[in-house]
Image (cartoon, rainbow, N blue to C red; front, side, top):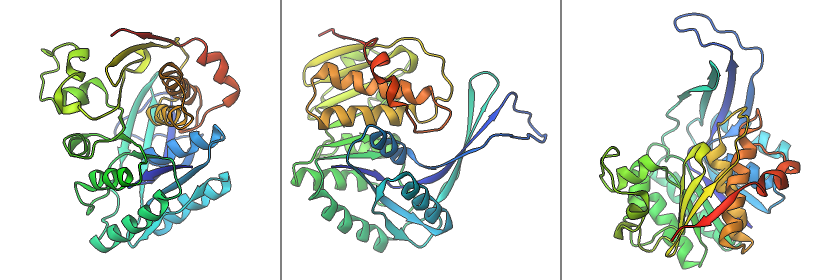
Length: 311
């Protein structure tokens, strides 16, 4: 079983508009509302790949109840830790020929007692799973090194952790003694971790060989429509993807993580793991709903992806 962790879930609302008018009324005819947050997007894609997956994290209030209700309707198993404060809304406005404007609520404040309740439940869940994904931001009140703690606990159970976060949460995990099995930063996040000026940086390959990343088995640097550059142990790969007509890019990074998780959990080759990640990312971008894929299109895209070992 794959365990997905979302520490700041949300109700994700997507508003498509031909043109976003500022300081004016914008009327939307079609609204998509889903159980969201990066980790739940990962969960949904894994479920659509017919993988055994359990969604966990912290959740609260009426919005939290709505999130659980939507997951149950979809047939997705979940085991959240309840908190007192209300979970959040996240709004994505898709407008003006491919532009995306996001409005993200901060979300609830989690107490120290609630955090400990979550950790105890997580330790129990670890005994039943083969892989963990951790995605997105930490809700307010949670320990800054919580992801580091979760990775260390997973290592005690010999369970690999795939981490997709940014900022201080990513830096804390990367600089800790307990390293994640995989990280999925973009080029800007790599530069921030190394305190490098993005306009005067060394090559990406050289950056990924920095001692900071020692002990991290997989690094997959997502580059949008240009594919990805990946490092597994000492091997480097360039991944080229076909051009597609993007419908909704929201959640494509999460779908990529789901594909990578599925490939790693199944013991696939490096090439297959990277192809799975890129395929699910593209499939999400072809759908109007966030965190959704059409499995019928897997083979068509999978076979167009080129993975080249460059070092």
